[in-house]
Image (cartoon, rainbow over all chains, first blue to last red; front, top):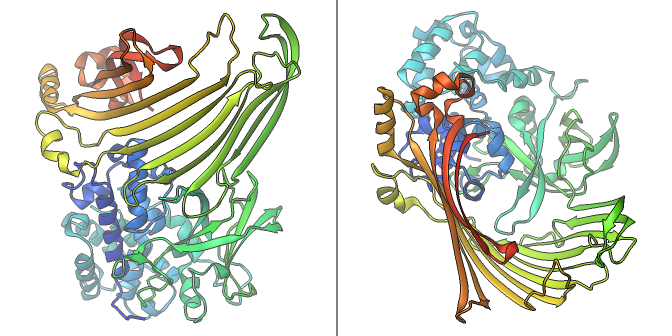
Length: 177
Length: 438
């Protein structure tokens, strides 16, 4: 089994999102969209007719490899929500942050990590070296348009709040923007 | 800022004690749906299981070498009643959701990267379509193939709609004063029968299906008596482009077969490949980013027996029609955005759109008065304007457009249509209306 650094799952999430974008490129507005705009686009606005929805389902079953039903498209508002239904980005961001956290948290359970406070996981807050390393790693696996400096600043405020839990941080990053 | 609603239930599940040596079994998050495989168009039922919700359990289990989340032998699906199992549902396959980007194929294990990231995080179980409607299902993930160690279990409340390939209904009814074929009326009893089998062969080559819809009467002359039996096959023409075609053969008539015909139908629907079209159809003059839908239908009817009456004249023994049609919607006219903006003296985001439907009936066996083959074209065009694009509308209809301004539109439509059920009689109509969209 190959041993690669954690973070692959976060990068994979964005590979899947690009796969979704490619699968509905028959809508000529889609290929020119940036990834964040596409992620937040309404599915039923981008692919409207039954044939278009089925073409998307056919393409997605091949790459990136999801077996969708029309009900998946109508029950998820955006492409991000659709992908989260199968691969919750917040979980992957949480797992990645766990691997970069302080003390014994990386070797503990994921459930415990999500309940840990930011002060426990990243002592020193947003300006601490632990978080700065984690931030650097995250920006390397997430496209810049989906993890902008504005969102990074908002996340830093959460990290600086010692009472906040790591679940809050993971959720905030997974919102994208 | 939006919140990730799913993380709350996820957290509560993750916080439960581990399955190993603990009383409480972690809950498996499941959802069911009907999926149509392509290109075989075979309908199957799948249960999606979010393994990311039990990550700590999965992390422990992957250390046991024979355990594999993409192997069906580590799962069971039971039908439960008041928490007790009353039967097992056969599992056909366990399929990882998401491809390994290095191979381009589905993942085959639950720790694909070997770094405890739980990839893939969703596995789907394809189950045999023998689940009664509204039956409650419980899905269990085991740590061993012998099903002795339970790792996680769903709460037993999963129900599936359309989980049976076979449907049958028989409804008796009384029909007072029913019209008979001989012009008289009398009280009759009728039995309405409906049968459908969505997948007769259950294979990955093509979909074979059958349908029947009948009304049997206590009086053989009942004008409502009817039967229709249909056998069809369907499949996608191209593997990577949605092009389902179907060939259907049906026999239809009344219960005594005094009216009897066979109908053969060959049809195809698809959408045009559209990537190339951006410079031509998505520019400053016309914005049509989505392709038109195309449908082609061939129908051959052979009338074996005909019940001729004053109301039903004798029809041709053989009829054939070729009916190509095109539906093109979601077209906007960018220049109109500026016009609406100028009218409103503001830079509004609203534009005028248009929709187009075109088709033709080609009837080679049906000759015109001049002796030529008959062809009847038809179509309609609509001009659509969002009501919110007009300032006056907000004053007149404040409640109508307040919730979502784009959901109410004015439609001006001209249609030139033919009615295939009435000897292709032609009508030309202008329609003006206000539409509220769902």
